[in-house]
View (cartoon, rainbow, N blue to C red):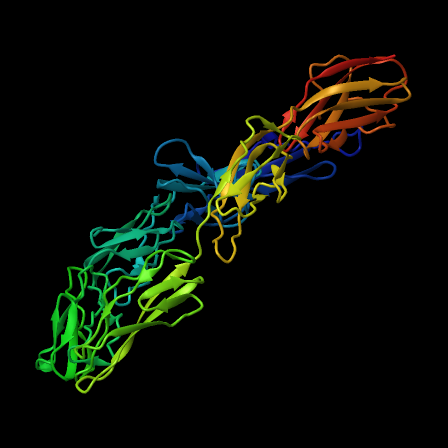
Length: 599
């Protein structure tokens, strides 16, 4: 039992009646546990006495804290204070393992929560305890600290979500994997760079062997780096395929023309080799890459290609065809001309025939391109010349199959030579007359592929319209005898016109001011006028003349002659000194400053 004098709290209250003081006498009686906070109050009207039983502000109990894995958030919970009085609310403090207490959950003595749990965010890694403070008016009661809450990094795990299908040397594969909650990407690398390489998620198979791909994921504040995971698989040798690119002869005969087999193989780089299959039984033989025929029957040519460390040996491919009896064959002994020209040198064709002893005769298979007289071939038109060779048979031999020799006949070439010298100091607005001759004597025409810098007529009149490099192209299209000439180009530099204010005239203050100058043809120009004598006058100047009667700046475009002019009307109401300056865009340039007076 404890007794408190009424003055412990403001039990003397001012009466609502200003001239009467009300004195309240109170006896406070409470059973108070030692060391706890008690609070009692009483109010009444008039003169009275009363008895008040005080309560005890109890501290919260059962404070706990738990981290949300992978975050800096700790959920703090507690059991509300019991008894009377009930607290107005609570605030939470975090007690780091070292250093001062930190306000938690956004609460403080001035910002209470009435809940019995809260979330403390952004908690640094390490060990912490929490205490909860109950508040009733100006009284507080602090809980016992929670058990230690250790904010630690969560672990991450990498799982491959892809696997290669039949990985083979020379192929590729897109690797994918999922990682932990840090949000950092899973990155890939090769543990076997001699077999496979990795760029981003693209895996390239460089050689046959075992490929091992490393997968890694970096950690973050609340996640540790994931343990490296590996994906290992075997990269197989690549297959090779042989394809004959030569066609087996359809009319092979004993003693006839030989056959040169050709084929493409796989990418090992090893050559395709040819042999005669044993089943042939002497029908044909192979020497120096050429198949010849000794007997009638079936000739079978085998094609093989060896493997390497990265390629399998190709499966053997065969080419079989029939060899006929005792025909004759014609072989050209003269080489087709490699540079036959219309109206050029003639060609003497020769050939040997079969064993009949009859002469080989020649004719033209393309008389619009070439004519044949005896063994002399004359070129009369462009195209493909076909020379036919024939040999008659006799009692012992069939007539030889016709043989043809084909080759191209082309028009004569011509060249172009400039006869005019490129200008050494071309400037915008200038001109130049380009001239050139063709070796054929035909007329040369002119053009340009830099029309933004210079214009060119087909006759060679060149005009300079902008600064840059001017290309003048010379062409000759050719005719029935001559090929089009290779284009010849003449290049030179065109300098831009100087950008400057070159003139300024003014009338009376109520009339006009004209500013003129030079610049690059086609460029945009803005002209400003400022009050007073200024070192510069442009956009944003605090001294720009502002007058409702005209626009400042005035704008225009540089004309074909490289000049420009703008007019300001009704400059001001009275005399004065002014500064004008101009600015050019595309290309950018700034003019000189001109100071003038108007009286």
